[in-house]
Image (tube, rainbow, N blue to C red):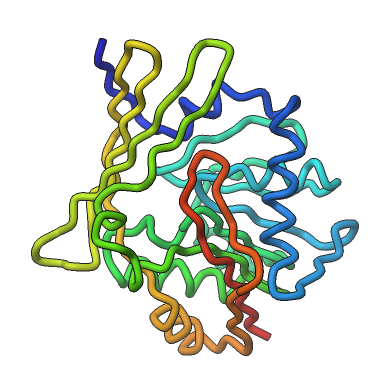
Length: 245
């Protein structure tokens, strides 16, 4: 049977017990981000804002933090009593002059944009609401092998209801060479789930460094000793820490 669903992330999250075996995995992945580049947030006193489609908020909760979470249009809200889910826009915090010590946009959050201007606008908002720093993760698109540009390595989630296989395909725009349509296919037992496509675009290291420098960043550091892997993926991503003051 073929079914069309909104997000791959929602489907996978619904088949995982985050209070069970996945709890320690999520916390380890969260630590690999917040401790990148020698950073040591004060988990008892610092405030955190988590952006986009990932499970970092659950890792923070496990570490004793109560983060604020914004679920953008391309993400699934994982309900949890320990997180504060904000239903508005990132720009609302700028208008409210509300700030956070740390902002985290993991799982390639910056690539979920249709245009370069949209990416710049996201970073502009972050520069205005971040007190201590911004964590994000990106793939090295410049040095990808040609086959990696079109398909990510398949991911398998083993569950009590059978294995779930995820295949992620990129269809690149012939006119805008930095943009692609991302489609996820889920094979669960004998069923095929086709997820809603998302328009995305690349983000390169030098490109990101230029964008944040133009916004007044005082530090741009790429973690070189330990890479980050999203919980529902086998593709590695680099962790980047940006500080604006």
